[in-house]
Image (spheres, one colour):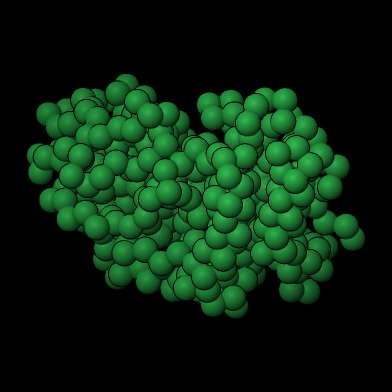
Length: 361
């Protein structure tokens, strides 16, 4: 089969081995005579899948015992509302660090529910960098600090997490979770939609400190309370069973390929291939992100003019390179190179970039 070089921003590439496994088990999962999509979510067979996915997340991320792992629906966008709904008290202020469109959307939802402030922002330079820690205004009285670890549209990523703030830190990790090891203990809550690094769309992973659950007010609707889902092992209502099955398979694939250390090594190699092509192009390709803020997951760049951008994208598509269109906020091109994107796909794109420059530079 002639598989595309899939650089889609999300839903994104899945490992071929994971897709093959799903194909083999699709009609008859573990001799049940049914697809995993047909199993009761209360069945022993599905229960094993569900608990395995949670245990793998704990293992890969080294989740401490004082954290809970839950599997939800509604995407990261629902978390924009659930976090302030559960944790922003009327007399407190939530602090949002703005590094792109998704952090803006998170802030917009929080403003509906309570008082907010912006601790730092790189909007003035079209979100081309992550603010320095010295620029960020954090008050111990803040209800929480919210940040987005990777910005798909602008191609920026927090290079590290050296902060030591005396306030809970909530992080949207939708587009870079499991791409590298992280100091989870620095965060009170992290969340991620599955459709970039974890599996197909439809599942949202949330990992939060157990102590947060004591702060949830009584007047939050049942399904929008985090403690509803921790108490029921994410089985309060019917979960997205096929998505969780695929999540389990992706997590097993990550484990088999060296865990988060293996993913980081692989992702750095892929990113270096493309950033080197940009840096050695004498300005023909211009990256959007500052070098110190470059993302391992989303490589954003422009060519000298819109005409060349369009020609590049058209010719790339003819070569079976899919999803390279940049977002309208930045224009140009974007290669999303999440965990499942192969080194070979990145080399193919690099080779095309070099050839295209030779022809049109």
